[in-house]
Image (cartoon, rainbow, N blue to C red; front, side):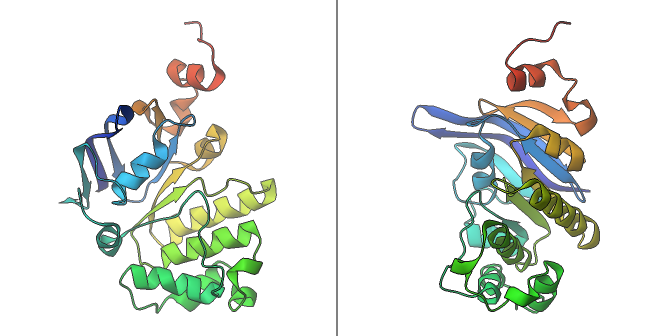
Length: 237
């Protein structure tokens, strides 16, 4: 079953074309990986889906209903949540209260907050202030806030940036469990192609705001256009 569809999404910022005619579908249960060089339009795509920016043209559908032009809180209430490249925890608030903010923004009652804290193994930090947390724990708190919205589609924007190899492995394991056990469809932006190939069920590669590749992770590194973009040289046919 298709959970998300974009049709011809384009976004211009003055003379800058950030996205151009981007169309794709995400199936329910996917871990849908999105990659591309810096400036490819990845975060702009998330911002349009989440309602931060309206598209210059094109449409967004979620579970068969059009979402184009809705405000972020309206989209969140419909079942889409996201995290950001830079963790944005409220420093003067506790871990518990930061996660509760997600439940409030998502229109939920917050009944699952204790479950989420336990799932993320934040029990011993539930009452710690966000300002005292390390980067990895802060990212877990932001993940918890997104889960607290009771989302059915979770969009993660470079969630592993700045993490150690061990922390990345732990985070990837959490993403898989959220997808498998919580039945949440995942869209994840990641700059490192090998990480996405290892976790994704399907992949989208953007380049200069356009779709360069869409398909299976197994075949992405065999695509000559993708190899050229990432390695900077043409592959001989």
